[in-house]
Length: 448
Ligand code: B12
Image (cartoon, rainbow, N blue to C red):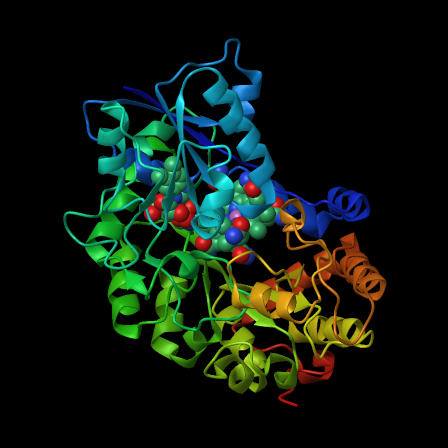
């Protein structure tokens, strides 16, 4: 069979005003531009799992739009994130209209398979591992089932795991490549809509396999910058140290997502710096510990908030920049919160900052709670699940106050001047291996 795997790419913001801010504010757009060009690791993995007798093409949707002729496939696989699901459904309708059978997979349709079946012949829930070869066989034999369930655990085990087909990226313009070292995250934050929603427990890839993937990607893309597509990379200190020691020899530069626990281990921080880690993205969520009450079942994030400043110093003093992420619209947040967050950001020495709005993605406990409390603004709001658009009624401010507060934070934080100040501050800290002056630190992290 001819199989086409179609990736939906690009970054999305629905609010026209925020989109406008996004294209004009230097500190925001820099990262936006960079990340929008990442390939779909999910589909490269699906390609890797496809039995060799079939012909597989990997296509970015943007390339499809510009293609001289619309390609015809026997089977089309489409990945799904909530924000672009309507476009993905349109694409599915289009391919089905041309006689192809369409299978959808990924985060969104794993949660809402029945919705997706309005547009696809079949839906794969959870990982493609453990089920895709059967889907392909059934399609070839003309007996596709409606819903398939892939592996939710042991996804990197022999017989289930397949290396992503990085060779499909050869000759393209990517300069960034994603590699996954783990799937899931044991913290279980209420709002999280990432891979923990398609796994039953935290799965870590054997170090050897990750190194092999990195080498395979390096053969196809010239000197790529790597992003680890993990929810939380360095949870297991033993695995992490073995991995980082091996990584030193690969001479790569990379970015990943983790939590503040990484900074509690000096040796791990040293290894991070030595292994080519340029930046870690950490969900600080809110500067005040009280705001984090109930966010994760064990209360872990709330207990860690007083340590935020020390975390930044431990990492940035070693030359690893921290991209601190804050969520606005938490239940304890009031209109005063925006000023407090900005004060914290300015005093923290954070090299980069990301603000998002609390977003009830379908399938998350947050969605269930806000729905039960009658706080969702609409029944269906998938195209606004961008992390920048407000979809619910906040507890201690109005929707308008949340929207305005976010715009204000964007303007203040991503202006040319503030962006430069953060970059300079980080460079000074990295060169000096020292902490940001307490006097300039303003609030610092507060546990109350
Ligand atoms: C890389 C990435 C991107 C890339 C995607 C590149 C691309 N062309 O696909 C870019 C930068 C473009 C991107 C953009 C956005 N992203 Co993003 N992104 C990620 C990130 C960091 C990693 C995803 C990844 O590679 N995972 C690893 C792969 C292996 O897993 P997977 O995709 O789930 O695939 C597996 C299964 O789902 C399944 N599967 C997936 N697709 C298919 C298809 C078929 C046919 C089958 C059978 C199976 C299958 O099999 C795969 C292997 O098991 C995650 C965060 C994270 N830490 O995971 C956020 C994340 C996925 N993004 C998110 C969001 C919100 C966005 C944006 C809306 C942000 C914005 N405002 O613009 C946009 C939306 C873009 C869009 N097209 O809709 C959310 C999605 C939540 C949700 N439920 O929808 C996440 C989880 C981050 C978060 N903060 O919550 N993103």
